[in-house]
Structures are given as C-alpha cells and as structure tokens.
Image (tube, rainbow, N blue to C red; front, side, top):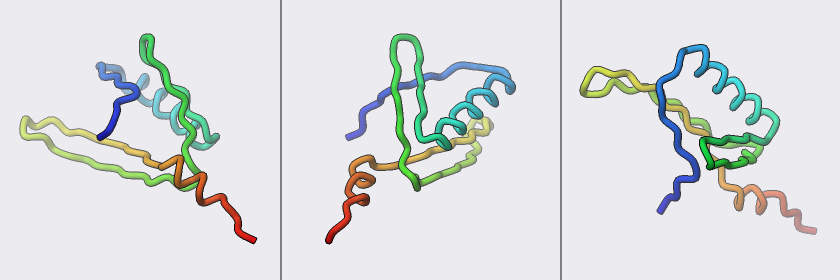
Length: 85
C-alpha cells in the first residue's frame, strides 16, 4: 500500500511549469530534491540510477496528459553499496 507524501495540483503558466521542472531536474542531478506545498514538505534523495518513466495519454474527454515518474528504492540503494571481502 502506498502513502502520499505530498500532492499539489493547480493551473500554472507554461513558464511556471518549466521553472518547477527545471528545479526538480537540477535537484535530481545533485541528488537532493526539496519540495513543499502549504505546510507539507519532503526532501528526496534519488539513487544513482533511478527508473525513469514517461507517459503521454489522451483522456476520454480529449485532454492530453504528460506524466513523468522517477522511482527508486532507498533500501535497495543501501544494500547495493555493501562490499564483501
């Protein structure tokens, strides 16, 4: 079962969206993404090789959606760093 850590949904200009995506991309590159919305905030530390998913969909009502997902497992990242003898 998943747990939502943060959610935000609102209309913005293309410039505002581009700025947010650029800041997220910069954070991914640097290994730390800080996000906040209202009183909620989360600091993320993507692993070295997260999974990247891009999906474009045409909804039944004619809307087009672009979904970007970056997924990693912090526990697996920790285990991968273990060296044996």
